[in-house]
Structure formats: C-alpha cells, structure tokens
Amino acid sequence: QVQLVESGGGLVQAGGSLRLSCAASGRTGSTYDMGWFRQAPGKEREFVAALSRSGSSTYYVDSMKGRLTISRDNAKNTVYLQSASPRPEDTAVYLCAARSSRFGNWYSTYAYDYWGQGTQVTVSS
Image (cartoon, rainbow, N blue to C red; front, side):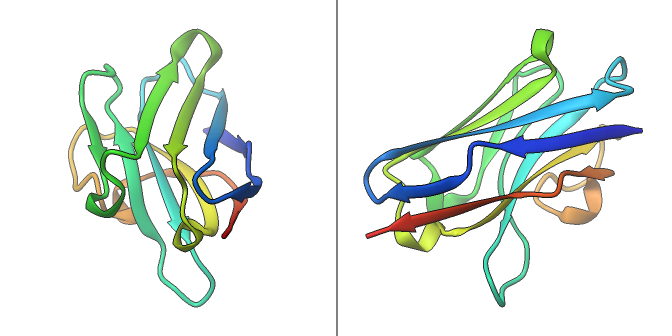
C-alpha cells in the first residue's frame, strides 16, 4: 500500500506560478510511475501530467503543454507539479496518483492504483 498526500494548493493569481507536491509513504520501496489529474466541479477527472518511475519520460495534457513541469525527488519520495502562468480555467482539485504496472494508458485514471485526497487550486483573474 502507498499513501499519497498532496499539498501546495490554494488561491493563485492568473499569470503567477504554482507548485504542488505529492508526498508518498508506505511501500515506497517499490517503484511507481506517478501522475497528476484534476477535477473541476461538474466535470470528469482529467489527466494533467505523468512521470515514469525512471524519470526519463514525461507526459503532459496538450492544453497545458509548455506551462507544466512534473518532477520527482526519490530521496524525499515526493513528486512535484509546477505550473507557469496558471489560468482561471485551471481551477480544480488536483490529485496525485501512482501506478505499479509498467503498462497501460498513461492518460487513463484506470491505469493508476493509488490516489491522494487532492488539493484545491483556485486561479483568480
């Protein structure tokens, strides 16, 4: 079992910067691919970014490419999501996820085994 706890959300001004953290605990001796998703009110959960367990591959949602950076610090068992120039439409609950399998669609919620509770991000205009 892996427990994931997100932090770093809150109220952000459009055009500012945002950095979210996801701390993992539990069976972190196993390696996991990590992902970030978001869910706005009344909308489905959608993929935002993912990072392979080796750190060599990254994946981003097309609508936010160029504004996002996903990274990890294995010594701290923490994954980060940085967003440059957030927009009001980026307002959502952001959730961290981990998957143990090396296979499956990076962009699908079904590929991930563990989820955090989420952190609210509100971008004001």
